[in-house]
Each structure stands twice: as structure tokens, then as C-alpha cells.
Image 1 (cartoon, helix red, strand yellow):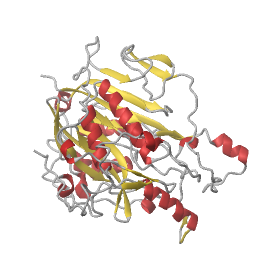
Image 2 (cartoon, one colour):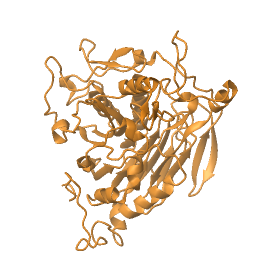
Image 3 (cartoon, rainbow, N blue to C red):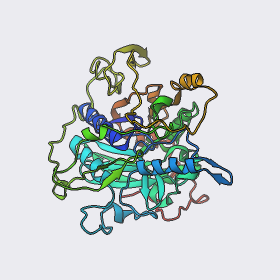
Length: 468
């Protein structure tokens, strides 16, 4: 019997504040649920932000006071999941860590909010975020089940280039794959973050755990990224999902561009628990604070809001065996492949192979940067030769996206999605996970094709045997 699911990647970008990004995250998850998505991947550092173009005032042997101030704002934009700097592993997952007196949970409530959204929508969510633990930041990925809550968390073991200035190295024990059952389909899934995918031994540690869903949230928008994802799919005989942010310079968070911002989006942010419950406060980069209201204990097993029942949980009938969508709110259900945006817009249809269609966004108004501060903007950390040059650079894409979905033989099923900034949602319907097993006929790089009698990999703190 075919083991079919609907998978999606969201090309969402970080907004001006963490609270605004959480609101957009909720809306995207709700739209995915309405489209029958079972599992949805968000980009690297989606919550907290990828500080693209920042140098934090650092040169070899010197750090400036302006750079330290910028790092302070970035530190405040990160989320606190209640884990320890070393990483408590299963004790964090199972909520066995000590809770401060008078508190109902550890951290700032972000974990509880993500679990609430997953329960409400019925979508398994994989979220890239910047995690604050102790005095350090970690680039992390969270696995959130609609029925079991957080099942695990990855921390990037090797930040790339100047990321090493701001992100600590995560423990290799977090490379542990997790198993779950969605709509009767057993998944073994794991994530490699951005350029961890260029580490052959790290990839092999995931292959060894027999993953059939390989997740690659990234910040890399280079042309070489797609061939890498296709290679990984061929090697692993797994479905590969990769999500990247697409953003213009003018839409980077204000603190990155050297400007202050007072977010109004936090006022509309959905809360997870009763209005009377008091949660911890989160400080935004501009110095304002707001309360993150976590789910109350009685919501842990049952959401107060009835879950959104996904449409067509195993896809929809069509002349072709696989349906690939990039959903549009204005043009939904009119073609197998459409573009989706959180803002209404017209679409231009373009035929692509296999009788699919791609709808590209039509004309739309630009999204103004949020800046309602009365204070004059601070001096940018990166100067331009003239004001005119700065205005011209404002529309430049600092990341072009490139999100994609790849089949277990290396076929490109959806994407890459280039220069679609406003929340593109690529969806593959009727993905048959038995194709992963069919691919093992001639290649199992961690089994029959491994010569494990001659070659052996060991990873500190990680069991490489497939999880039960």
C-alpha cells in the first residue's frame, strides 16, 4: 500500500521583531493546514533572524562598541527554549529540567507557543531558529509534532565563517534522528543546517540512522546549492526538503540596518493561554518588552481551539501521479503548481514540464520597513559611498531564496523558488515514501553499499544505529 504524505517548505523571511515573525509563522502554518500539508519546513534562523550583512564591529584583534550594541539587539531577538548551554537532550524534550519557583515552564514560552500552533493546525512543524541558552546563541532546528509536542532539537555543530563569532558550536549528539508516524506513514527524519550539508561525515551520520526524510534549512542561495540537494537525495535515497529565506536589503530587520523600531505587530500576536495567565517577558531589539503567553498545563494534551482538519490528507486525484503546488491565496485550486503568498496579488501562469504550472507573482506594493520610532536612525554599520547608492541598493536581494523539494532519486519535484520574497509555500502532494525503499535496490550507502567491515564512523555522544 502506498505510503503517501503532503510535504511543504516555506520561503518565509524574518520580520522586524520576533513577535511579528511568530504571528506570520502562525498564519503560514494555518494556510498549510488548509492545503492538506502534513509536514512543513521553515528556513534556517527564521525565528531570531539570520544577521545577513552584519559584521558586529569585529576585525581581527578588535571589537567596536557599536558592534557590541548590535550584538545586544541580536541577543534579545533570539528565543529562549529553556535548554541548558551544554544541551540537556532527552531531559529537555521530556520536560525533566528544573523550573524556577513561581513559573509554569522554562524559557520565554516560545516552545509552548510553537507546540500550540502545531496542535491547532495539525501540521508537523520543523522550525529554524536562533536559540539563547545562558550567555550564548545557537543556530537550532526544532521538531514539533501536533500530537506529541517537541520531539527533539538540533544545534548547528559547525557555524560557517563569521557565524562563529555569534553562534556557539552545538553538540554532535543533537544529530540524533527522530521517528514519528503521520497519517499512518512512519518517518525517520533529521536535519543538517546550511553548510553542515557540505560535511560528508555529518551527512553519513544521518544516512546511518536510515532517514527517509532529510531536512536542510539553509541561508545559502548560491547556484551550487540545488546540485548538492540532489546529490544528498541520491546518496540517502530520501526525500530532501530545503527552505531558505528570500529578502531584499530594505526588508532586513531594522536593527540589522542600523535603525530602531517599535513593533506594533506584537499587539496582534495570538496568545496561547488564558488572558489571566502571566508569562515571562521577552525583550525586543529596540528595548521594548512583551509577554509571551505559553500554553497552560491543561492545554498540553488538548487544544482549546479545535484543530484545522487538513483537506485531502493523502493528496488529490489527478492525471499525473505527483502533484506539486506553490499555493496562491488568489488563484488556489486552479492549477497543479501555483505560487502562495501571505499578501494578495495577481499571478502569471507559466507551463513547466510534466503538465504542471508555475504561477509567478504579479505586480504588488512593496512592504515598507517597520519604523515608527521618533528617534533619528542610528548610523548604519555598513556605509555606502553616497545616499543615492544606498537607495539603489535598498531593493537588492541579499538572499534570493532557492527553496526546493527533491525526490529520493535526485529528481527536482518543486522549485527552486528564486526571488519570491513574500512567503512562497512550495507543496508536493502524494509523496510516496515507499519510493525510498525502492531506491535501496541498488544503493544503500550505510548498509549494502557501505563496506562497513572496512570503513567505520564514530560520532561522540551519538548512536548511529537506526532509531526504533
